[in-house]
Image 1: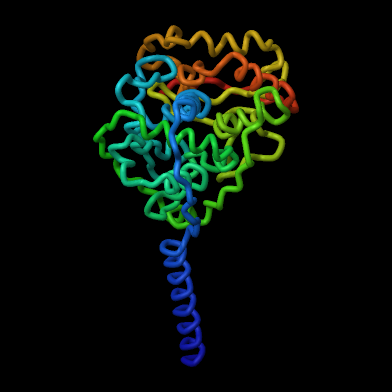
Image 2 (image 1 turned 180 degrees about the horizontal axis):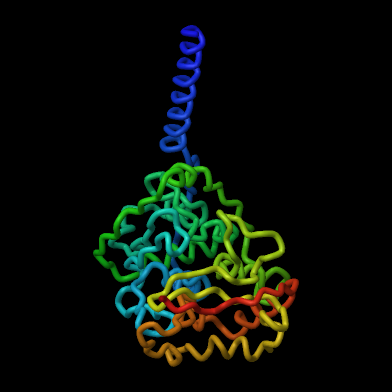
Length: 323
C-alpha cells in the first residue's frame, strides 16, 4: 500500500511540475512575434489617410479616447483624442478588466514604427506582451502595410496627453491563454482600389463590423451567425445589443435601401444626432459619430457587402433597461 501511495505521490508531483512548467512557458516565452522592420516616412497624403482610418473607418478613436456617455452614441470628448479610453470588464464579456490605451506621443514616443506595426496587426506590445483581442488586431492583420503605416504616421501627429492608463487585469487562465492568440500578420500587398473586387470586404474588415455584430461564444462565432447581431454591451441605462446586419427582411437590413443606410450615418455628421440622453434611457456604444465621417461611397460599399450576405433571421431585443 505504501508503495502505491509513494508512486501516486511521485505522479502527482510530476504533474504539478509539468503544469508549473507549462504555465511558466506560456507566461514568459510566448508570444513569439518578431518586430516588423519598418520605418514610416510621413507625407501629408499618408497622414490624411491615417486620419480617415483612425477617426472614421476603424474608429480607433472611439476606444482610445474619453466618450461622453450623457449623449447618444457617446461621442468623443474634444481634446481627449487618443489619450486613453474607458474600462471594459466582465459586463462587456471580458474575463477581467482592460482599458483603451493612450496612443498619443506622450505614451508612444519610445515606440518604434515596427513595434507599433506589431501591436496593431499582430497584437503584441513593445514589451512583448499579448494584447487581449477585444482590440481587433486580428482584423488589422489583414490591412495593407500602407494603411498600417498611415495610422502610425497619424498617431505621431496627435496632441500629447499625459494620461496614465491602468494596467489590465485578466483572470486565470485567460492571463496565460492570451499569449497563445497572437499570430504573425500576413497582410495583402496593397489595399484594393475603391470600387475594385474585394474593396467592400476590405472596408468591412477594417471597420470590424463582424467583431461587434455577431454573438461571441468563448471567442468564437457560431457558424452561420456571422453579422446576425445580438452581442450584448453594457450602457449606463441597461444593456444594448448589436443589430442584425444581414439582409433578413424582418430582423435585419433587408428592408433598408442604400440611401437609407447612408442617411442613418450622415445624420450624425457634425454631431447633429448625438443629443443628450436622459438617465436610464436607451443609448448605444456604436460610434455613429466616428463612422459618420466615412464617405458616402465607402458607406455605400459597406451596404452592398452586407446586402450580399446570407440572410439570417435573428430578432434582436435592442435594449433592456437596468432593473
